[in-house]
Length: 308
Image (cartoon, rainbow, N blue to C red; front, top):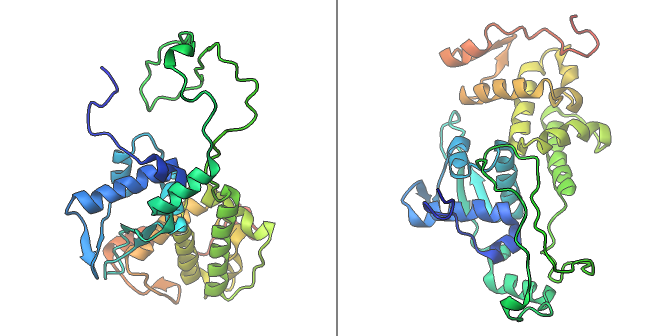
């Protein structure tokens, strides 16, 4: 069966991809579809908001991994073209709602077109008749694997066109924020939150940011890292032994963070209850079943005083 248009395709504007990036344009166009073409979501102060879970978004973007999805939405938010908020009044409901900042300059067709035109020049020979360009038939094997299969070979085409003299693109793409810089900025936000919540003074350094940057690079969001800070502070701050581990090296280490995040999400869904005298003040059935058998006196493995 042909892969060409058997169902509704995802269509994007090339100028939009030029302005904010290809993945970001794909995701933002889909958000726009939900906002403009459906009655989903809710309206708040004259603004329509829609929501989908990560699983529902991935059904619409089956060619992305979950980490790619998270990075794409995080970048849209940081660019200021996508707004993400938790609009439900209940503290248990952590559902993210999305809307588009249609006033962003990155979505201004006139400004993007001018920027694009100022950087592009018409390539020589662009208007030559097609038959004058001789291209040999590709010798690459037919691609029969499905989109989601893992491919290790890169297929190339053999042509008679001489490309050895091409030293740089005639039309450079729009400049984008450096990925490492973006991750570092987000890591600083998390470190600042940690300092505020725990009344600490961790400095911006390689040691403080290393684990935070690594988790963000894996696709975790600033909100998820900050939630872990809040949860562990609620759990450990009154414990003289454990309070010493309210630090970046412990909270965000790769072997511990996923477990902390899972517990933090359960804690948040239970209404973020306080911890009094070593016990959670709220005794919600779902919440209690997640924590009542946990030994909170155990120091994390790999640190002085840990049980072997």
